[in-house]
Structure formats: structure tokens, C-alpha cells
Length: 313
Ligand SMILES: Nc1ncnc2c1ncn2[C@@H]1O[C@H](COP(=O)(O)OP(=O)(O)O)[C@@H](O)[C@H]1O
Ligand SMILES: [Mg+2]
Image (cartoon, rainbow, N blue to C red; front, side, top):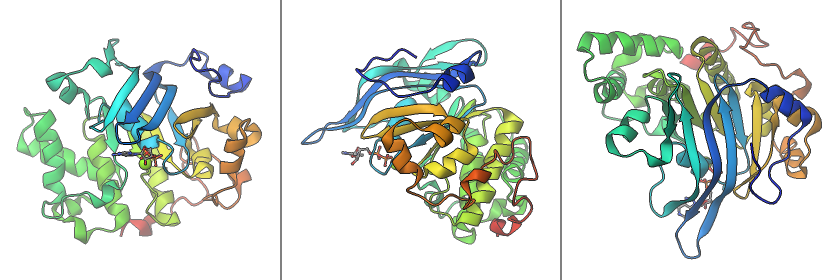
């Protein structure tokens, strides 16, 4: 956590305590990303962050501040005119190897993506292929990355994945237009889960959904994280929502991470004026921020547990 820019992000003593003894799974250091257009856009500026094993790290900031660009940088998904100006990304594999993500090429990169770090893309639920069944789209992930799997094994895993995200496996033969927005987003999460990644990057995974459906999906993500211990980078412009689900939160403004701290510290004693501004900018999911609890962590029967089955339809 060495600060390289003049100021560096704000954080508290509580944050330092929290970090004690945690094991990193993904480390990004001094990431700067430009779009080489005229005039150039400095979309990400000297961003550093560490994601720990099993942790949910929220990445907040208003539209256009560089969240998606940073996420693409972490996962080596940048395409021209985007260019990584500086920075290192290291993946700390559970097997003990450190992977220099920026240096990965071809097969090694393909094996890394989705297998180690998967992504739920912004607007993903609208990018399910309309003419291919859910089953085939889940199979495709496995055919590409696990060519040795038999068809029967792929079928079994596909059904299991749907069940995991709260979708009836009978939906395997459905097409995108036959599913609600919430179900389509659940299918996208199932695809990201398919290979048991150690990190999932979720870019605005609930933004287009109504609040009840959002709730159901958030609870599912929390539950799956408990079950499989993957770490999550959860991206949204909705900071109050992040307070409910994140262990830590990084606040981004104009390409820079201006504050990074535990969710609790962000909630109770945000230091950056911009963080405080964001805290009041959106209605909280609960409507009552004081009631923010890590629903789904140790308390499976959170405030509205069992009431959102309807979002599966
Ligand atoms: N392909 C592109 N060409 C030029 N500028 C881009 C491109 N994509 C994104 N940008 C710019 O980069 C900045 C960050 O965008 P983005 O990462 O999408 O922000 P966020 O995800 O926080 O909404 C914005 O100013 C946006 O206009
Ligand atoms: Mg975005």
C-alpha cells in the first residue's frame, strides 16, 4: 500500500487494522489508463488497490469516473483506443504462484481469464445471445475452458449453476427473451461462476433492475461468496447500496481513487468531501441506512429474506 501519487487515497486507522493479516488475491499498483482519442482521456490515474481473498471490495463513483476502465485494466480486457500507461497487476493464485497479469499472452491469458478472474459485464443481462439457449451458453464456457468435460458433465454442471443462482434448472432450455431481467442477470452470474474463479468482477450487476430484484440478487451474491469464498470487486455508482454488501469501499472520482476504507468507516466517518456527497446522492435500498447489515453473511434470514422469490419470475 505505498502511495505513489502526491496525495493518495484517504483511509483510517480502522482500515489499517482491518488489513492486518489478510491475504491478497489481486493487487493493482499505480494503474493509469488513457483513451488515445483527441483530446486524450486520462480515464484512470495512478489507481492502486488490493483485493483480499474472500473479500467484497466496492468500487463507487459517478458515471464516467473510470470504474469500468479500471475493471478492464484489472482483467486485461482493454482494447484500443484504451492503453495501459503504467501499472502492475498481480494475481496471487491460491496455489501460491504470483501471476504478472500485464505480461500474460495468448493461451496463458485465455486460461487466466474466466478461470481465475471472471467478470459480469455492465449491461450483461442484455448481452445474452438471443438465439442460443441458456444451456448452450453455459456449455460454451465449459467447452472453451474445460474441453475434457463430457456433455453429461456439462449438463449436470449447468443445472447446478442455475440452481446456485436461484434459477429453476428447467430454464436451461429457455432463450433470453423468455426470461425476466433478474433471471437473465442471474444467468450471467452463473456463467461467471462456472469455473470456480477466485475473483469475480461485477460491473453494475443490479443497476438496471428494480429494488426488490436487486435485493434478491445481492443476497445471492453474498451467499455464494460465503459458500465459495471468492473475492468480489463490486462496481456501482450507488454508494449507499455498497455500504450494505461490501467489506471495504474504494471511492473513485475523475479517474482517481480518493478514499478507500472499511464500509463501516465510510459510513460513519468518511473523510473525503466527495465521499460524503456520494453518500447522500442515492436512496439506500433499505431506506434506513442505520439498518445496514451484511445481509446474508452470518444472518441468512436478513430483513427481507424469503420475500423476494417473486423476482425469479
Ligand atoms: N472507447 C472510449 N473512447 C474514449 N473515451 C472513453 C471510451 N470509453 C470510455 N471513455 C471515457 O473514459 C472515462 C471513463 O469511462 P468509464 O470507465 O466507462 O466510466 P464508468 O464506468 O465509471 O462510468 C469517461 O470519461 C468516458 O467517457
Ligand atoms: Mg461503467
